[in-house]
Length: 158
Length: 268
Image 1 (cartoon, each protein chain N blue to C red):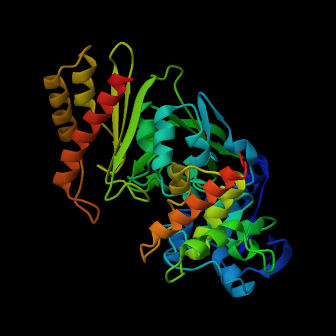
Image 2 (image 1 turned 45 degrees about the vertical axis):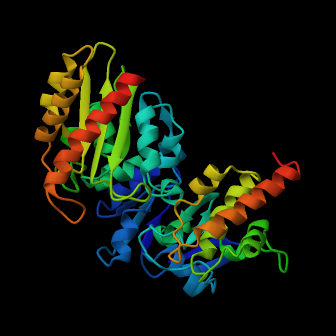
Image 3 (image 1 turned 120 degrees about the vertical axis):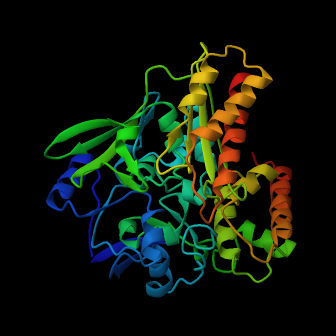
């Protein structure tokens, strides 16, 4: 069955074989390997994408159910050489160790900051509660995002 | 692989009438765990996510398509509390109360809330119309329910009078992203009438009837009454030992959790 998905601003037509996940289609059919495949049961957040405006685990979305939907993956945040502020904040704070979980953190954090440029530490923690870092590098991730929120306050963000 | 993407309930019911073997897909957070684990290989999907009418929440009714995120923002305290304990923001954006009922896992986190309120489950079929069943008639066993294959779970109806004093809590091996080892919902009316429902401590949600009868008669429960309440809850549950916890621990935790929630209700 052929479906159409609008991913990072581009329409894609994809042949769906069975009940495979949106994550599989992104990685295998659309050559977008940024979303990572780890737990396959919605527990680690490394496959986080935005589906029709909501952050979800793409391993828990049946690809065929994404027909006609808008999807934003981690590849959809940087504008060519210009990174999303969340990506810059993570780099500056060293909020990356092995990097495997980073795409999921970027998606979850970018959605938070796009909706609320100056979240509290509690709001940051809550938004990232579904993202697991097995290097336990949370400290630097949270520091980077805390600093970004503080910077936005200084810039007069709401 | 075949799929229908109905935008309204009539179209969904018609598709299901044509193929009652089709798999109903709501948020996907249960179905995809089965698919990814190689335990399910559905051939025809009816995707319910686009039916906006199913998502509606009113004070007396929760549409089956309401997500945990929707429920977190609703007006029922215990429902918002339980919704917030489910999975992660990512899972709460997808999973629905209809899916929780469809899966009917003993650990389903909406179920103690529905049991404590004696809520009704609404089902709809293209040919046979609607029927309503109380929660305990609907959930028949471990991952078993009374839905006929031509029916869609469309919502739950709550009673007219809902206690303002209500609390939900659950115990697992950690705070976030955890499946309940014991879950409980306590509701207490101004006249003292109390209901206590527990999840993951029996094949279906359990109402702690002897504990309810005892504490409902106490208008101002003393410390001794609260201890007796906890003891009766521990006796009323029917837990098993599995990979998440032992029977003895679950029995003990049921009493402790129910007492804690009752104390929160009394303090509201």
